[in-house]
Amino acid sequence: MKLPIISVPIVEIQLINSVRLFIKREDLIHPEISGNKFWKLFYNINQYLENSKLEKKIITFGGAFSNHIFTVSAVGEIYKIPTLGIIRGEEVEEKWQENFTLRKAKEKGMDFRFVSRENYRDKEKLSKELQKEFPDALIIPEGGSNELAVRGIQHMLTNETKEFDYLCCAVGTGGTLAGISRYGTEKQKVLGFKVVEDLSLKKQIFNWSGKRNFELISASFGSYGKITDENIRFINDFQEKYGILLDPIYTGKMMQKLFEMIEENYFKSGTKILAFHTGGLQGIEGANEMLKKKNREEIRL
Image 1 (spheres, rainbow, N blue to C red):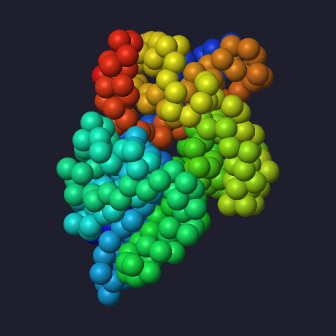
Image 2 (image 1 turned 120 degrees about the vertical axis):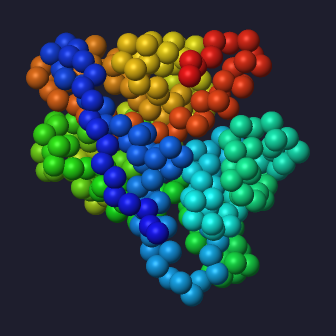
Image 3 (image 1 turned 180 degrees about the vertical axis):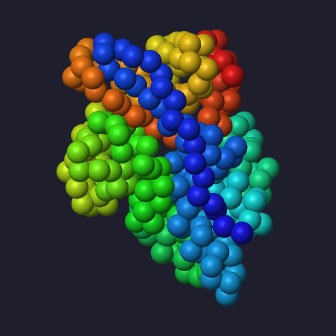
């Protein structure tokens, strides 16, 4: 049993300032292994499963609200593979049960190791130590981004996507944008909406992609993980108008910034734009728990 190739629909949102905006529903690809995470794991998992001699175990890294941590735990449950999450922040260890994402990952069988933020920064060292401890384990980087992940993103692009002038996605670790950049057509422009201000992103994406056909646009709206009242209003209004739920950390911020750019006439009249919905909807319940504690408006589910 392997991760299969699955097709998802492209939906037209609306015509704004003579610009046609569409969204590719990668969030529909799987109820738990959704969006770009599915494709980033596609070759990593399938190649690992092909080696029947290994004593299977998957290890990966992430913060307490990581979509990637949740996704890997779901893969482990489906394929009956033990999973281990290396979680940033020792302070989380005493209260992880209060975190929706970690609770769900635990329910799916994932074990945790909580490491200090200082030690977490040196994930190369951590990976070497873990590989020595678990020689047969598959160790996947934070966010799932590596060369195999970039290769997997090619399956988000189809004959249908070739007809668009711009391809857009949210950017965290950069693997998804690198794949879209690498496998897009020569005429297409690629826009990456950064939800984290990382000065090394551009170089890393180019190293994976090998092309300079992409542009990075800031869409953090303050900082990574921060959810403003404006973000919440946009997501709720978008769902009410188009019937599509957006996550507040990645796709929601990308679409909000993209709407602003269209309204400010960033794109020429007649431009066709395709934005990729990269999933991450499981994170909404955790976000709402936080918002509720602060007596703020919640994202409607």
